[in-house]
Length: 459
Ligand code: ARG
Image 1 (cartoon, helix red, strand yellow):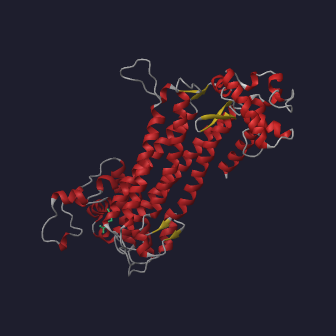
Image 2 (tube, rainbow, N blue to C red; image 1 turned 180 degrees about the vertical axis):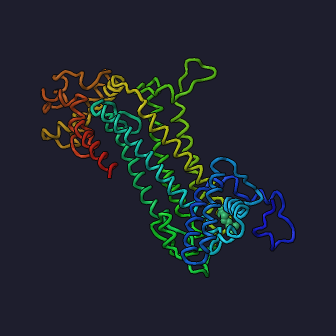
Image 3 (cartoon, rainbow, N blue to C red; image 1 turned 90 degrees about the vertical axis):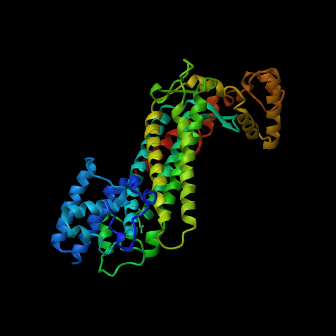
């Protein structure tokens, strides 16, 4: 096939390698359904504005329906020589319906066409991803509900810090993913605007009705400047930034799942169907999914930087550089979608081992802060209380025991303020349930946090 859409100006055919180099159809054919949707809305408007005849519009509708069917059933013959998804579809349409097919591009350019396609594609991807994030949040909430009072050590610097409830720990991730939903919701507003009408860069001489097309396609507004409409991809970059954050949250959670599943820690197990074995070591069961997700985060971050770099040197308006926006964007959507789908299921397939968590929390003097707070409540200034407890911990380290294993007499030697009521303070349950305020780790607060998150997820 010869690409005669623009070859009229040329004295020789395009070099074969150049043809392949400049073509995008191998990857942008993925936009086909959105391209057809955009074309139908454009044609409908041209007809309403009397730029196209009723007959032409009817032919275009019929032709595009057939093209869509051919694409869906895999019968469509995609051709590199026709460069991209837009010209492949237009050519087939013209083969099917004749001149009306050639009139479709009136008042339009591939520049505003492709920008429209990407926005339609991305809007739908955002809705899918937001839905998956909601599913993941719900899976975390379910697990948190079951473990609102399961206790494990909380860490800072990877050193035992204070006891926390497992439900509280899980909800930390649910909050992160909830913010990711909010970010996508916000990003969607800027994605959901119509470029069509900008034509190549300056607008068109035809009496178009952009608001009508926007309404047909479900866009909230039209892009207000034609040069901007065809040339910026900030909406895609913003989406990739949201995605990089989603993956960053996934990656941190993955890191913990991997650590928790290590036999040295043994806090959880992950169902076999989310793990893989070793070709040499028969005993192995590896957490490949979280490891891969951690790895794929690098690739999503890379796409964000790739798109920023793609954009930064471009003068107004459209430049072919922008054709390079698609593969990183598609790969970002695919990676985030697959990852979230798997994680939403995997969280529900985690077996929790509360006894292992408890044993770990009992080591490392996790309730030392509680003892200091206890002394403060008895009137000692915090800095002095800190000093007293530090000495007691040091004594225990030397003896190789826990604070709770000291006798009351031994403890009293560190401070006369210590009395029998200290024993309750030093338990894991006492420690977590004492942190009973909004955002705290107490089981009661975990229940409140779940209720709050549930209502925010519904809103
Ligand atoms: N395939 C092109 C892209 O992805 C479509 C727009 C091409 N426009 C042009 N004037 N070459 O950006």
